[in-house]
Image 1 (cartoon, rainbow, N blue to C red):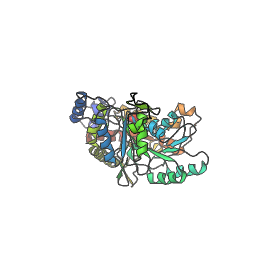
Image 2: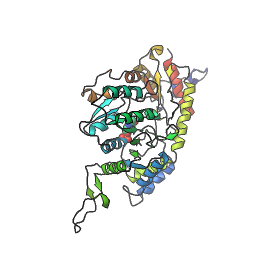
Image 3: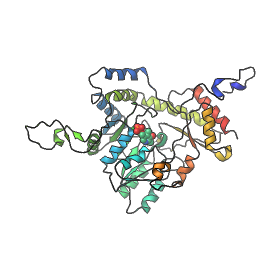
Image 4: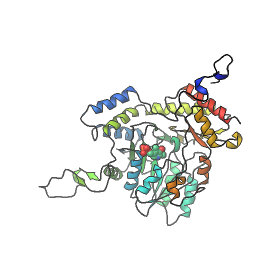
Length: 407
Ligand SMILES: *Cc1c(COP(=O)(O)O)cnc(C)c1O
């Protein structure tokens, strides 16, 4: 990538100078002809929504993950909302999650009229810290959480066994926000099997591991919870005779609304894309791991902390998170960010601690609430990572990182 410096070569080489032709994005979907064909096939069929492809997609994800049931919805945000409802979250309840996540992991509790609190992160994995959780539970008698929502940041599983053990002791439920993590593994089993949780949620937004455009799914091994999830995803309406209330036989009751739900349904068009993407899920995760390994090698020696992996986990590597040793680099995070963007590297920040958002600050949260989370936030950037990333693109990213970290 140092071609610009070679004697006799044009110095206005576009790829690694001030104004690159094209930004390397931090993530990108992988759509092939078979995906397109699968979607077109649905468009030509009788059902654009509520047809046969949705149950096929649900079945494919459930069996891949080893979960009993799966309910497809129009986003992970919707899945988190109905997961909270199915677990009975309501007014007066408290839900705990990590501050280092997308806002949806916390907002879902607010949708239900509950309040939210945050547990600081583990400084090595950046996931919700089990030690901090244990401490906070011990100090919170009387105001214990109804649900804890661990988030598998970047695709690396949380210490689920530890969180599960605490749930047994303190009687809270667990929703895994696995929006980043389909295809990842924990203790040699697929994330999503709900061995240590009540419900697991996936996102199929294009930036995530597999996509349906917009979309999400909630998995569970509990038949009753699955039924509630399904009900909440479609207006609280059932057409199953056993669930309907008795009515005079001369009246026509094809369906009944038995609870208050939403229209959170996925379409068959989306499910067709998702179902076809499932065939390449392992390939996507393998490629992401190859890219991560190569980053690990190429970035060694730079003043950067590479993403540490707990031996219990096999990450789907939705993100490759680097922490800058800013004191050694002698620049601010903002400078690094701007310089990398100038060099055509689409860096991003995952995440601003949720409680620092103005909406959350209005609830009374203050800067400094979770110290590890804030330290992480002030040093981290996500660098480009997606299955179709080429070695040349990766070399460009590494060269840019080498250039901007040069003290
Ligand atoms: C993307 C994401 C969500 C929301 O997913 P949508 O499908 O866009 O609603 C929730 N939680 C986390 C951690 C995410 O990254």
